[in-house]
Image 1: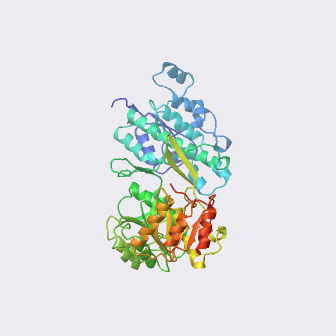
Image 2: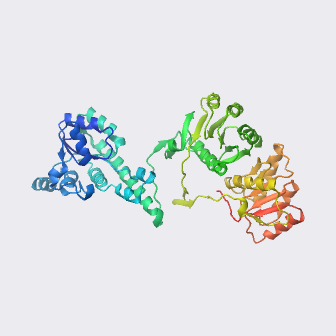
Image 3: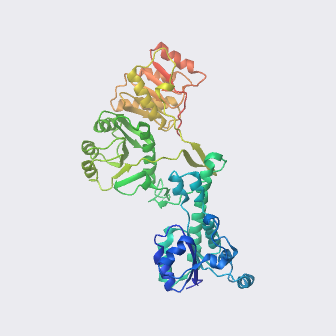
Length: 510
C-alpha cells in the first residue's frame, strides 16, 4: 500500500466510550501498544486489555482536578516528531519519548453543556484543553500520525484498521486530519460565540458540521447544501427529501406562522416565500378553505402550514390540492393516513425550539448579518393619525394584515377583510404598483373590498395610495408613518372618512 504506515502505538483519551471497545480490541489483536488516561484507562483495563498510563511515561500524575493530564513534552513529542527527520529521531531516543502512531480523542461536550442550561462554572469546565491540543498536534503531523477526533469517526476508523491490518494510507491520514481540523474549528467557534454573547466583539463566526447535499440549488445546474439539524426542528412523517427551494419556503412559512402562535386556528399557503393565502377561523378546516380562496391558482405546488393540529376533515380538503409540504404542530391519525396518500407529499411536525436571533446572507465579497425583525405590531403601540378611528373589526384586520405584511417581500401592500388575505402586491418597485397589483388580484378572485383594510410595509410619501385604496372601498390603513409628507395622506383620509394608524416601525423584507 503506497505511503501506508502501520499503527504500532496509540494514545486513547476520550469522553464518549460508545463504540470504543471494538477499536481497543482490534488494536490489541494487532499488537498495538496502547497508552491512556483517567476514565479511558479504566475502561480499557475493564476490557481485560493491557494499557500504559500516560503518567507512567511523563512521571507526572493527573493534576489540578484533571485539568492537566496529557500536556507534556513526552506526549506531544511522541505525536509531533517527524520520523524522516534525523534530529527528531535522535531527540526521541535522547529523551526516551515513545512514538505515537495514532491518537483517538473525543472532546468534552461543550455545546451540549451550554444547551442544557448548565451553570457557567460547569460550562467552563467543559472547555477541553488537552483533547483539543492532541487533535491539533496529531492532525498537523498527519504524515506520521492518524488522528481520530470524534466518536462519529470511530466506526470508519475500525473499518480501516480491520481491512488493512492496521496499515493506514497517507490519503486516509490526511482525510482524517481534515476531519480533525473541522472538529477543532467548530469547537473553538462554539466557545467564542458563547463568550461573545456578552462581549459583542465585532466578529462573525459560524460553524455548522451537520451538512447534507441537496438534489440541487435553486436550479438544477446549481449545487446546493443545507447545514443544520432539521431533526431538531421537525419530525418528518412522510414524503421525499426537502429541496433547496422547499427549505426556503418552509423557513418563510415557519416565521410567518410564529406570528399567530397560540391564536385561533390559522392556516397559510405560501409560494416563493410569500403568503398567497392566509386566514383565521373557528376551525382549521374553515381556515384552510378561506386561505385557499385567497389564491387557489398560486396554491398549486405550495407550502401549507397550520398553527393547530390538522384533523381528518381538513386533510380531506388538502388532499385534493397538489402541494409540496404540509406543516403543523400535529396531525390526527386519520389526517396523516389521508395526506400520505400522495407518496411525494412532505409532512412535517414542527417542534418547539428556539430559532436563531440573527439572519445571515452573502453580499458582495462578504456577508450581511442583522438582528431578526422580532417586533410584532400590536394595538398598544398604534398612533391614531386620523380623526376617524378604526372600529374593533377593522382594528383586528389591520393587525392581522400587518403580521402578513411583515413577512412579504418589499415593496408590499396587503389587503385583508374578515381575517382573510384578499390579496397582496409583492416585490414591486413602487408602492402604487404594489397596491394596484393587490386590488386587481383581489378582484380577479371575486373579493369585495368594501370595508377591507390595507397594510403597507413603509410610509406613503404621497396621498396617491390612500386615494386609490379609498376608490376600491378600503376603509382603514396601517403603516409605519414617518414621511415628511404624512399630513397629505392624513388629510385625504380625514376628508374621506378613512381611518389610518401609524405603527412607528418599518418592516422591509428584501
